[in-house]
Image (cartoon, rainbow, N blue to C red; front, side, top):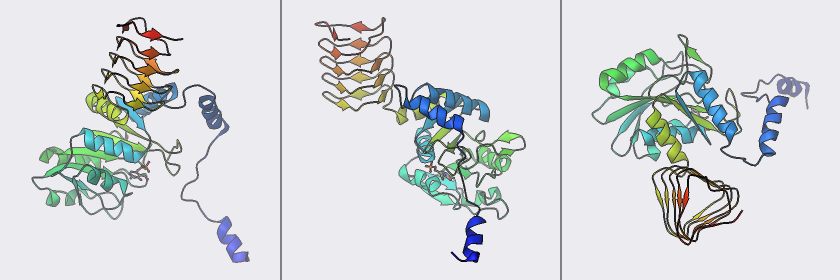
Length: 303
Ligand SMILES: Cc1ncc(COP(=O)(O)O)c(C=O)c1O
C-alpha cells in the first residue's frame, strides 16, 4: 500500500459502525441459552421500553423497518386507488410500502437544508385521491412536523412518520416517532440502535397496534383450514379456529379462546391460551391450561 492509500484507509469515517458492548453480547447469549428464541419476554420488555421512551402507548416490534411501514399502510386501509404523498429522498422502502398495497406514491420535493419533505410544496400535490402523507426524518433530522400536522389536518389526511433513521432525535422537545398517527423505527446495523435486522411500529392507537401485531403473526379471529400444518415457533393469536386434523409443530403459541379441532396434533413446547376448547382425539403433548375444556373421546393429553 502506498503512503497515500494508508493515510486514506486510516482516516476513513465509516458511515455507521455498531458498538456492541459485553453486556449486549451477554443479553444475546441469555436468549440463546433459553428455550424461546423468538417472541419471548425480552421482546415484550423491549416493546414496552421503546414505547415509553418515545412517549407512545404502543410498540409492535417486527423483523424490519420495511415490515413495520408495510403493516401501518395496510392497517390504515391504504390501497388501490389511493395516493400517498411522500419524499423522493429516502430509502426505497418508504415508497415501496405504498406500492406493495397497490396505492400510488406521489413525490413532493425536499428542503435543501434538512433533506426532508418540504411542507409548503405538499398542497399542490393533493388530489381527491390523496389519503395520507408519509414523511421521513432523514439521517436523524426531524421533518417539519408542525407544518405537516397543519397540512394533514386541513385536508383530512392521515400522517405517517418514517423515523427508521432517527431514533432519539427531537423537534421542539418532542421525540421522533411521536408524530402522526403512527411511526416506524428500523434497527438495521446502520441505525442508532441495532438488533441485527429489525423494526417497530409505534402508535397511541390501540386498535391499530393490535391489527399490526395480528397481521405480523398468524392473526386473531381467523380460521386455519382442515389438515393444515403450522410450522414451529408460529404465533397464533386469540379467537382462532383450528379445523380438524391440524398439525402444530413444536413451540407454537396459541392465544386464548382457541378452538382446536378433532384429531389435531400439538407437538411439545406449544402453549395453548386459556378458555380454549380442544376437540376429541387430539394428541396434545403440552400442558393445557386449567380453564380450557377438552371434549370428545376425550382429548388425549400426553405429557
Ligand atoms: C427511511 C427508511 N425507511 C425505511 C427503512 C427500512 O428499514 P429496514 O431496512 O429495516 O427494512 C430504512 C432503512 O434503511 C430507511 O432508512
